[in-house]
Image (cartoon, rainbow, N blue to C red; front, side, top):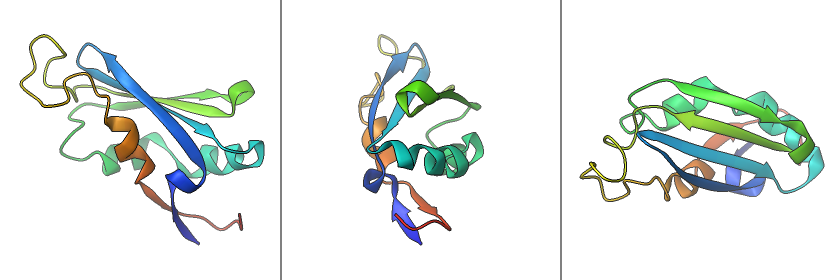
Length: 107
């Protein structure tokens, strides 16, 4: 089954200098294992190809049913020096929710 992340979670994003910070939170606790299995750092890096020029780190927050991703070198230097329209990474969460994953489970 192919679906977009917006069917499984909501998201928040922001900046830490030149690093975009994107958190995804499962809409239901039973969705968290699916997110954990299919939303890998490698998959997120591929989704943000051309935007994230550095590595992607993933952090698991099981008690919150959430994953947090750091997208290094993705904001053109950060808020005060970047010429990007979204120098603080506020739209990264919307872009993340459009990511498609192919899952084996039924939701």
